[in-house]
Image (cartoon, rainbow, N blue to C red; front, side, top):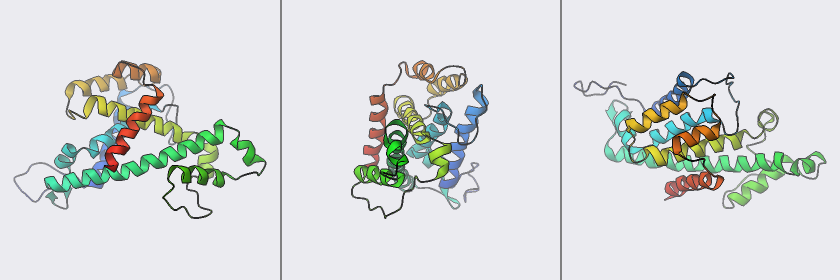
Length: 238
């Protein structure tokens, strides 16, 4: 979008376009810089899916006030400081809901494929919908969930993409850890950006643990991944 001010040489994006653009930039950088040994098909995932981390990381950049105020506009007018701040807070709030939904779907995956729940479903003791509703109501007791409704219930998710939600949540938490430790205080850090580009160039050649260790200086423990997601949620709720 061309701004209304003819003296402004920059081109700005609507918030929705900016989000899609930055996320696709994350995917593009991964494809350009990395050297995966196997072709990545849409919907495929590893545990953790390192190839999703760049896109999730770019979402953090989009939610940042400094980025929003620079690249976005409303119609032909640049966002004011107050508008950019409100949009940033709103994006974080909806992001919080998305994280909670992913966490619920992850618990569903782990219960279905990692415990005896599948046996109970197989002998008709419970249904997969019952299992999902139990987890959902435990995690979000104040949210009304209509009977016989289960967003997770799709054959594509249950059979063709088992544990995809778990893989996605691990990737999201890794991206969050990278954001908070490397870019949150300086979103335009060339040093950290160059270092991240070098790490991406080794995608597909090194293990996920080695990649994270090379960038962060340590291999994240499960509790660290959980805490960084909690930090996002608490910040968004506040």
